[in-house]
Length: 248
Length: 264
Image (cartoon, rainbow over all chains, first blue to last red; front, side, top):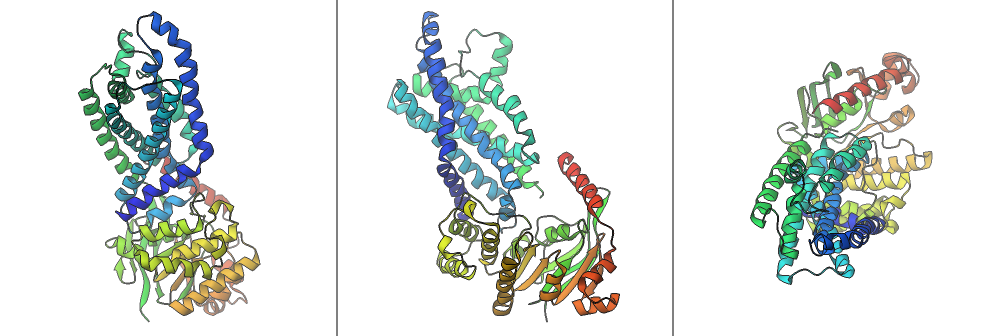
């Protein structure tokens, strides 16, 4: 337990200390909110879909969680390259403990980031339908954060250096975000796109948050939770397995 | 004298490459032991196996009487290590790096608090206690790593090229700390180095490994006598040949990397 706690604490300290990273990573969601939210707002309203900002915010929060969590996981590569991983690997603790500590830490950091984006969205004019939905929305954020930290760790465990990083960004992170229901409603999109969105775990996180923050649903909260929990369990298992096989 | 390290018929194969080829040696308790060899000779691979980072293809390793393969965590508590490359978290402070280490080694808080202060004083970093490691020089990082490796009271201390890239002043200081420790706490020292004068000066036992096999083992005097040379450096060259191993190393490394890349 102490080992898991100190590993978790380390992730948190690293996050809090990288102020430039925090500020930098808040610029993008803010830009999305302002440019897309206010830019497409009028068209969205004319098409009879209601308030676009309200629709967009859960998507933007999920984006921050997705990015931050995945990169927290991928940080394993840095630790490999800068040697710190060895320090943990020769310690009298199991690989599973290391994986759990890191993943919880990464997920906590991503949830914090999501929370900050939520607070910014309040400044832009977003209002959740009720405060009762917030704890649930937080829970979904954390679940997504766990899922993508585990995914990041799994990827980082098989990559040797940062060269594959651009690849991950272009072929995994961006599609996960853009092909989910983050930016557009999934009702009435072409079937192929609908199928892709249905296979994208981000879609369910966003949907769950929409239910709790704005009251609208596409898949429904039960489906959202079921799928998120299942995928998180699978990815954590795969991530732990791949992490346990890292050889330095 | 009891044996701290007992290695018998140790073999490590990376596919077709035999990195360590039937190595056997022992290191007595309280010994200062130099493990020498040209690049790619199998030094690092052997150290990785001794410190549980790699599992051997075959053979046995005992540390302080414990079989490494069967008692991984007991063994891990017995040794401290300073890796060849820095392995500190640059974002954390000196104290936090030490605290992290103590926590993952399960050292009790009331034990490690004073121990950390004592070790920081020992490596002369007390004033820099709360500075982030990224502001440290190479020598300071090394000293901090030494302090960290000693935090959980290990019985044996592995140092993989601890003085590489350091100026002679820092190098001398470092050896003072290490030998002081060996004398006061009776910690067994197991180190590698490419500086032969250094090995000749501090090591009481020397083993030379080449092409995955032990080429010679004994005191520096014995090795000099064996090869009929005047210095350990000449003896080393006599034992391992004068050809430069760069080519071979990069070849082996490339294979290892290639192997690592496609293994999963």
